[in-house]
Image (cartoon, rainbow, N blue to C red):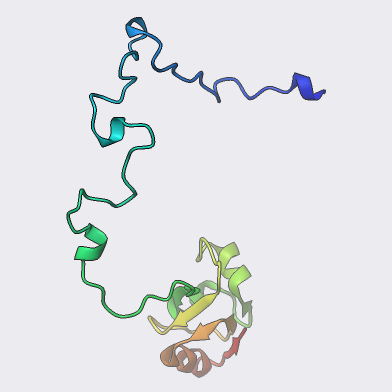
Length: 146
């Protein structure tokens, strides 16, 4: 294979419409820009979110509290979901993904206290709620923060 023999996959590219090449092309004269106005001009147009001078939606809506853009959201599961593992198993994010309890785990797992647990498990997670911790330990298991 040579560089001059490379070509994109069939159907992945389209030939660009040639604008402003006569009225027979269907895209002549104004070249799809309509008649006059700000968007018809060369270099014309408005920025994203501009509403013609009206107060933009992003500024009309009240802002409340603090939204941390650097937050690393944890996946949350209840202790009842852990009951499907065998007695004495070590359960971490990898095991939860393999079992299909979690579909993704980007930053970690938090175990919540919903439901009941009967098996003695060693659970490794990023965080535990107080009730989850007490339920796991009451069943004879251990909790490890990783």
